[in-house]
Image 1: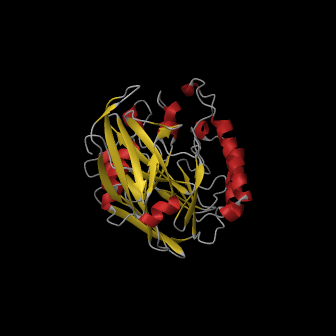
Image 2: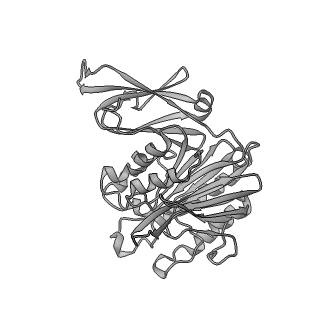
Image 3: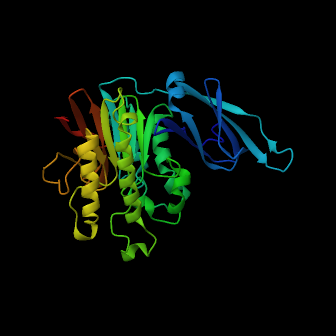
Length: 369
């Protein structure tokens, strides 16, 4: 199997389903079995064998019930009009651990990795807790120039999750840069191609907001390749629809925690060139704050870790809730820049946040929602 699959699968949660992402380094036919059901990566009935990213759409209730899945792979030697040539099928079993508990839920958050794969993996392992949900919150690579840039999130998730726990993957502003960016929707978990969506895993409900780039669309750096303003307006409309459907979203009986995932903490104040969309971001934050009433907002982007409560120093446009910026760059003992991430533990009335590098845990706080 290792000769075909480059990495362990990544089990991404989107809406009420899992999207299992498998990366192959050879042309191969891949399928996944969950219980008695078989799932294929296909294009209108034609199984896809090209090497690269394979997506499988699995009903969440099924995988949560079975708690395991099997990946089958058959290397394609030569694809022909008739009698294609393949090698013998191989398989590999994976355990899966859905979120079933309602307290002491450990979320590990990474953002702004910018290619530091080993550091990112080291951070998650140094947290020294059993992780229930992994959040990779944008700018995992510095650009989308190459295929390797785009799949770096899966390389990190492979080592941290072993294909066994749910994962949320969002885009950051740097992901929008480079010739591969226009095809990100083919490679990332999406809701029918949209990079913004709600999700539910166990007692956690969340909404992923994609703020796009961090400067206005007409900035010369983009050379007319961006239209993020209209993209953000689409999300504002989608948030209103979510609110209209609250009973089937965040007001479901088993929802205990409500999260916002956004690479950019869009209610912060920035330097003028980055201080964009004030009216729109204020409107979005108000919709979230007054209707959804989230518990936490998890962000990256600033490269400076912080916990910002409403009406505190960083609250410029009206936070929808407490904002945790769970990424940081620090100087280690050799004055080298070193990445850090954050472990967020959800409990009944409060949450713990621990910031750590691959070498040490350097700050822990307990706060109420």
